[in-house]
Length: 109
Image: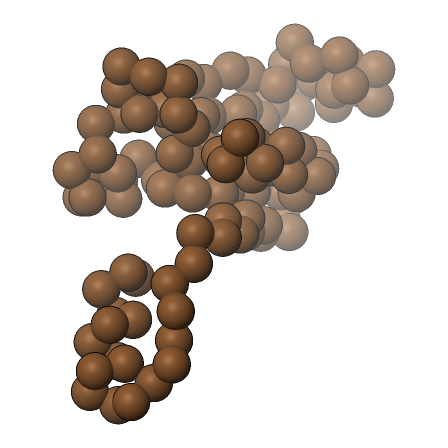
């Protein structure tokens, strides 16, 4: 949380610095769940107006070729309203932990 850094530094003499580094997270379940950036709930709580774009993985070429198109899964991307800035993404499906990497790079592109 960006507000904690200056408070902790002022009160406890720390040398923490805020970074804009975006780190994805993955839950290794079946199917995998991977997230990066803000969730829809976090964006709303922060007052960030977003548009959500979702797509099922059923039509994904890799899912079809590997016989996983019937298992479900989806990709959800949050963009700042009125622009093309990606502020968050979620991938649910087989190898979601691999797919989230491209979205992580796109957040800072």
